[in-house]
Length: 427
Image (cartoon, rainbow, N blue to C red):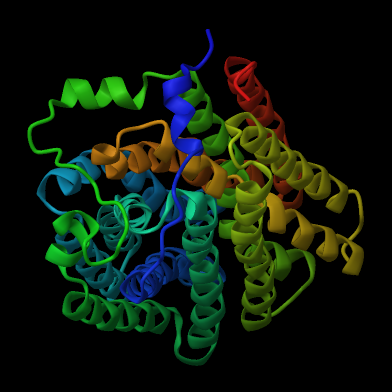
């Protein structure tokens, strides 16, 4: 079964459009909130050693503190995004940002494992649909010829935010204790939420059919039935392969983002502050790779969804091969260099995946479509990546557990190659 030509017609024939200044302002604010999202999420990794020592937790329990956020995101992303498509994306973003910011503050006030786990779940509730709704807003404001670049650049905020959360969180924790790290992230999120409320205009972004931004805007979803939405989300086998394949690749990110600081602390005897800083550099490599891989996909894959998928497969295989090679070396500069290179390609699939999903689904359900992609990211990748790595670390040791991560790239490649079969002949 091949994909109908109407499904990929949006890849070609678009007239050039000018991107206006307001679109870039909204991009900056939306990107900033994604920084806050992932700072609040990944600051936990920087304080793992302190929490473990204070409460005597196992690696499995630590992994659960990280994975519960991704679990909440995966479960709630779809219904919250569907509500945002129906009732307003800009207002929904404001509410979500307020929830995760105050939940992060509650993390800093936690007095035992259960209260911290509950607060972390609430962080996930707030963050559940932010990436999908934020990306839908940006896709509606920029021409489609730039969507892989814009999507990659926006999602790079997840990596940059992780860098900032790990780096600043480790610094605050080493100076003032682990609770201060959560409080610092919460203050940043609250301040940025207030700024977004002031600048982002629902009428200007979601109304007037693009008259203010000069670009395309989403259609209304208010009268669309959920059954029809589900049909559009899963009508194409290519879409299903993109969801599953990209989610499996993010398993590597889930494991590395949660456990790199601990790996550096244990394998290299780095103090907490230094381990957080070095891990932040690795994550920054991933942040650089996402927009660059997205730009390469836009340039080399223009007019050819098949070529975009093959490029995504190339990124995945490069990540898996480099990470596998890294753990063939003993602790040292060669191993660290290969890990950094693997991180560069680890999430390169996110830009092409977002573009494929956006171009194969109606504009009216873009938030919901991106939520479906985010659900795959979290339930197949980020959540099990951190938790499974923690479970394996308890049984095998942390380094052997990380050595198994490249298998996710292999699984992702197999699924995406199945998707390429359905695009055969569609060039």
